[in-house]
Length: 462
Image (cartoon, rainbow, N blue to C red; front, side, top):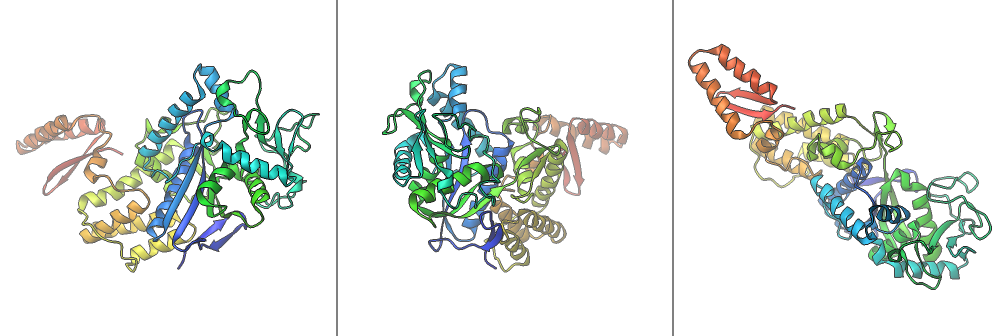
């Protein structure tokens, strides 16, 4: 069975075949770096990390690009509020982004372009659009894209021009000197006198800065070619951002260029409501990592299908934590040996079939639990090795099992071992009440003792 993926553009599952055999070129919209990354960013980063991991596990070479928007109205506003330069703010936020992504086990893309490094390429594309009559200079100094002059506009969202409403970043402004149509969007924003100098570039269109949409078209084409395989991002980017990318890219480069497959991950909800600062249910990655370990957060994301809405709550995270610990317990019980994946193996074959059907991680995770059960029954080091290596394809189960199961304990190792020895001494003296008291006392501090014929071990309570 070959890989099939859901193409948002065709609204159907399609067999995947890269333009260049054996080589996948993928572009994913990244973060606007004016603040710390939130759960929605985590969802997208983990989803496409799994995509590129599975492509590599399937034998493909992958060139993965995830951009950074480092010039934007929100960035300018935040830098002015903080009394720092734009570069200082964006450098700080990019460092924080990398710390959060690294914690979640997200592999770095091969390319992570900053928008400010590709302004010449953006200006070149804007010039091409103007020469083709698809862009116009407005009276206020902006350069706008004339949406109604592009016949295919709306094909990604599946709506006609009359059905579409302008998105949040498309100003509904048709007064004299502004846009000709509410759906038109800004390619080049004219500089304002009050704006800081570090957000202005000289150009044939006057001093200013690029609009939000143009950066992804310019950077993806520069790094991956005019036509590439996969373009990804959150479902909230489908319109207007990705619709506008198609319009300006194909408007400049011709029909049939740009991305062949479009992938969109689902929204994050918090207790069944959309995550929003205005609702007070907004969580940064760092907020969540204060309460849950990073691998639990990753597992929570991975065990849901990337296109499905993901409902965040402490209850769901706690459940994910307990489930992940069951997998690690199997690896602790039976020490895995290093194995190569034999895709003919029934467990590996089912795992592959799940991942080949639009990156079906829920079914793939279910195979991991079946395999863990068999490891517990058969005590097979080879199957334990297979469990670990298949988990690794999803970015899971690579920690030392005992270290993972003991993480988060309220006491240090020396104190715990002293209590274990005191309990053993009490049992040897037939003082079972004291032994039981020690066990209960440790449990109240989050330490779970596990007795076996070979002795007593411990782990942090889930």
